Picture (tube, rainbow, N blue to C red):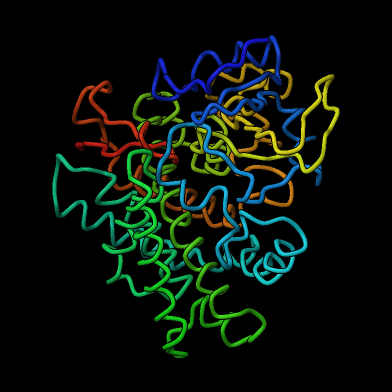
Length: 394
């Protein structure tokens, strides 16, 4: 079978590339060619993704990773040992050791305890947006500040540093930034958080102070964890919030239901996460040994890309998967991955969306796009999908 590149061209803003569905129905694991010419594998079915992501013979270590699309900003970090604290690029036992230090700090209960804080943040940003007046960019005035403020409060990072960490985060997630730019951005982020950890103010609290006080992890590990959570913690939610509002404004019947059925929000959030799947280039794994898998020999060192957008549109798991359905049974979606590397901050993302989406609907019941849908700039040039801007009026 001829190797294929990862499909990336979308027909609509809300649906993954059409070829992914074809591949899933025809051959859910097939040879894939990477930008550097390496031939590995593409996985597009729910069942195979679950099996592969729970099999410890497949590694998440950065030494073996290849970007499935051209992304120079990944070059300094893929093919090299993981940075200190960067647990997403580690296998057990190092991954386990770090994850255990964090797991109890991101439980659903702890996130529920954060709800009053999130409600204040959301209300303040909506007030600022209201004062700005229409038309307004929902991303810069709401979708980006809300998770940035939340993750700063959670970690104990001063929000005054937001311009620096947002700029450097954007560089790391960009497909267009150079390797040199990405290295510089990562160095600046480590420098920013290292200063906070070393010169910590115990009165400000926050997760970084807590980890430092516990004394279990090395300073550089705490710094690395902080950089990972700070960058992913605002980029992912900002992408989800902006794209979710764009989706609701493009599906007026769904928006109307949320306005009259606020109790629907929890399931609506799960369905939006599944339907949109912002980690649009999937997750990488690499076999540590030759593995027989679904009739194929996956050789040690061959890169594998699990396409999360394809997995979340698999009709063998979700009925009519291409339809946005707020009444759907959403259990089993993989918007946050699967297995031991499933996103650590998923409960925070859920809580932020459960608070933010109803609040903006209540505050601006006449919210509408201020431009034609085709004029909304999409983040196809970023590893976390979303919208660069969302001009709205009310």
